Length: 425
Image (tube, rainbow, N blue to C red; front, side):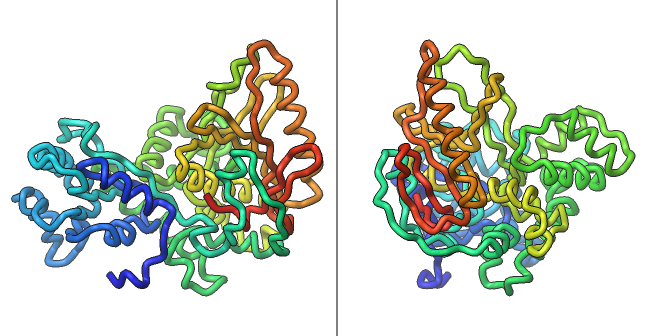
């Protein structure tokens, strides 16, 4: 690769840190998110098991002589290792034998079944999750505001510039796929459609050799797209599919399909948060549904930028999903985690960032600047009500992430206002 053409990713620093610490690093994530390109940037030799050259010669070599796959200057990249899962144990054994750090980089766009894998690799092979590009990585965020600094209670107020709603819509439909950046503006969404086609027609079967009903899988994906950024349950998904196609699908099948989508990194749900609130209020435990990139939901819903401009309700859910994608990427850069919060008192928070020391920050996500006042008031009520409860531990930072604000600042009530197009880790 021409290293001068490489676009830096936020995960790069983590890759270097892990290579200095562990014998091998496994970079996992959806297809086309840039895993191979990033791994190639960090390696000194490589082999691509998914290369179709000479009738998939590299894959056959892995089956016949796995030791040959491991030979080469380190760090050595083994791309799409799950094409031959026993390589995992071979890498682990080689790491143990040499006793060195930074020996291998593995990439995978699917989590294989554990058949043929004898050891977890714990302590030898560290895992990193890679996602499509955030707005900062794609150059669509100025990076004038550090999320980490905001979570530490620090922000210098600044004008960040006007952002048109149509631009936000275009970023949602295009998605964070690296190859979409060079496409014409009105062609970016085609990549998401092709991505889904490849998943359903090829990857689902290749993952474990089980034939599944692709039509039912597609209907389930459409239902998930209609319910993106919500805590929709299995029964609602089942009813949604019945309403769309008049076809029954049982809960067991839905659960198995959702598991497949997770293993293919097609979905990345937002887990519920409760560990550090310490109040007596019961917290809901449902996950919030998200695709690994909001463009996939757009493709499944067959929405165009013009259609979304006339459907602000759907746009609001998709914008929230875009923000959650970016928050996950940014937060992991400083060892933080992203959740959502719902309790049985009706209190909700769109996004919670839990810091390494256990403190937490509450974020509301809103499209328009006119929604900021109501969002800030809701955050303050949440903080004060949790603080008033026995054992309650309130958030240390309150913030509203907005699409159309032209400034980053702290309000008189202490709530931060953050444009998504100005954020970075």
